[in-house]
Each structure stands twice: as C-alpha cells, then as structure tokens.
Image (cartoon, rainbow over all chains, first blue to last red; front, top):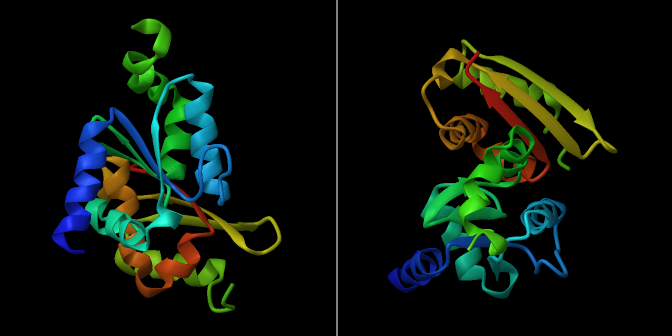
Length: 109
Length: 77
C-alpha cells in the first residue's frame, strides 16, 4: 500500500467518529455482511460515514493492510478498528455495541 | 466454493496452529457458508480482533476464499 492510500484511509478514520468501510452503500449494500453491519448501525440511529470500497480498489485492499484484517466490512469508532461483521454482531448481541455507540446518538447531544 | 475447503479441512488447519483449541465447524445454508467456533486458552487476555486474527493466520492460504463464507466465534474458555 502506498503512502497516499494509507494517508487517505487515515484521514477518513480520523475525521469521522464512526466509519464503516463496506461493499456498496447503506442504501444499496452489495454484500450480506456489509448490509448486516450497516443495518445494525442504522438500528442505533447514529450517523456514520460509509466508504464504498467497491469504488476504489486501492482502498479496498489498503484497508486490509491498514487493520491487518482480511475482510470487508470494517467498522472504526474514534479511529479505532472495532471489527468486521462477526465481531460487530457479537457486540450487538452482548449489548457492548450500544454502550460504545451511546455517546454518538443524535438525541444524546 | 473450492471443494478442498470443507469443515474437516478448516478444522485441521486451525488445530495445526492452535493445538490446545476446541474447534467446531458447521456447514450451513447451501454448502457455501461455514460457522466456526474456536475455544482456546491461548486466546485468554486477547481482544476479539486478536483472537480472530490468530484463526485467520492459521487458515493461511485458504483464508481468502473460505473467509468470505465464514462466521467466526472465538472465546478463551
């Protein structure tokens, strides 16, 4: 991964509280796992930046190097890699995700 | 889905790297999705991400293909 891609990813991850790298968009997800994570985030009613990796192969591969994680989707909160579909779903079930996202809820501002 | 990616094969790959693990692999939804649960003391104290990364590393070159169809759950005990 060249520097510019890494800087591009870093910028995205640092600039937004919540970033989801996914295949497709929340409205038109192109993969079941991406769809599931976007739906979970939507169910919490929080705003998040969605990055459609299908539009940029360099980001699609670069993000896997960036987090040392082999798949998409990838969720970042406050610049920290939280996980892919399995982990986000597990955190949703355990209630951990609600706690993590609580500070970003629109109505809690 | 390549035919050499089957539950037993995935299980062996993980056990080869995590000999103290208990590995359960189930095939479901039309033979192209796997559910794998790995329990291993070597996960203790590690984040979920680190645990999953250990399993992905164990799967090695099969990772790319199998991983897209894998629902993974890990825990230390």
